[in-house]
Length: 239
Image (cartoon, rainbow, N blue to C red):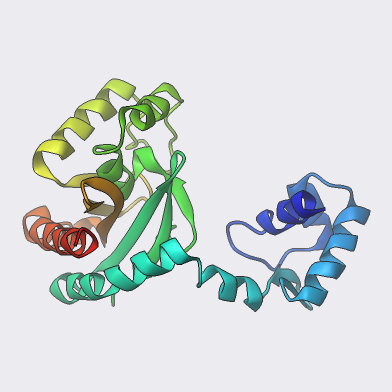
């Protein structure tokens, strides 16, 4: 029952709803009658809410997610540095952590000039095509890097994504030298980002990034600010 309930909740990715019963059943890979029964219980518990447009994730799930100890502590530590980074750049600032072959975005500060970005708090994107992912991959353990390079490298947007494992390995070697990872229209056409890793006692635990439209992408101006914020957070976490 717990496993099936999770399949239903996970079917709300990435937008959280609203979704119709038939859509949820198809996404979850479960019989319509089973999903209907589970939704009835989830609605009663507050994990799912119902509206005229369909079902969507409930506020109680947000409340639970906000108290996950590891992410809460990291977000609370990071927010002052992210705010400083936003003040220095006035661009969208992200923090992400590694989960398998993905980046999970755990915090985000929007810039004034909003442009379409697929990143959102709680969302996932592949490590290999994001600046945050590359920043973490460059300093991850060899088993993590081997796993990512052995799998087919994903293409999210356009033709800019690095899909050659040797090319990605070379890019990660450069990140280890410079401390900055770059992404040029690999996630969103018209958008770029750069990121720096965050360490806790020598172990990479996250990365901070700034995302900008192509026409405002100025690494010489942005990279020092990103590195400074990531270094400050690393020092705090490593005390």
